[in-house]
Length: 424
Image (tube, rainbow, N blue to C red; front, side, top):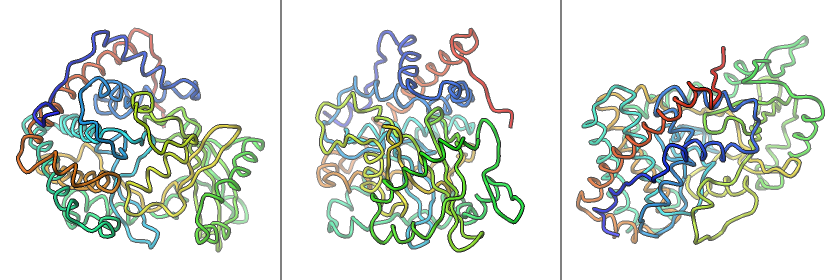
């Protein structure tokens, strides 16, 4: 398809009813008592709704023409799903950090979802549509320029390429500073309470954090044997140095609310050496039903997420793996190890533009690693045709997402959807 045609958007006819139907279908099998909390979080703003509505956009993108060129996509590309975390050697890096919906699919689906998120987040920060549009054009231009670089880069250099530009100041620099302070000991203090003798266990903060019964804890801990086998031999040595101390159920994110999400507290060399693992239920990607041509599809959804993350990130969490509990698939990773992300409310003025430059390069890197950079660069080109088309689409789709949000909040008001926010 022509670059200028990437601006195409025509909402499906049954839009109002399908919005709610798609949300309900995506939530089948989740913990029903937690769904009102998910919907409460989504009700806060159009961007908050967008964060929990990836299945709606996946269905929408599937109705549009595309290039047909597939890469590993994040699947839930938006401004909050990039962030800082600790690399295996302890350095703080910035990259895509959410892969629940990852799949091999058309590359532009990632770029379009990310672009529309800039408009919604920019509006939430009181930015003008002109500023949001400029940010999307900067995002796509950064993507094109980076792809031109990757198209001529040796494969081994691309495999170890990390984004360093724009990190010394601006919005990402602040995220990195925040991540520096967010070490395991800080998480230990936030999530646990001290018992007699100095031992610690998870705090009770229902519904967001709840200790589980003995039978559930036993199943979760038993699953760590299967998980251990998914780690490399060097990581198994480190994992074996930690002894589990407690298990709890934790609510995380927006779109993930309602999935079964456990946290395991373990200690290594004393009480100041905690390891907190997240054992998170992994459901099929919302893109799976919309992609006809499939390659390297694994039946285990936790493995799909972990392998997609390894493909797209230059360096990944050293404790990333997968397991199963009672036939359900789970992803395992560190819950908090110097992690940090950007608050959309901070995307004001030039910050929105600066952040777009970083995001464009990072997504180009991820797509180049899992596809052919020369093909992507050949399509994107050196002119701003793609930039303008994507900016047009982003504004149109942000408007559509806002209308979906209004449909959603109207359903809450008239009682068709129950929504609540936690009191603490």
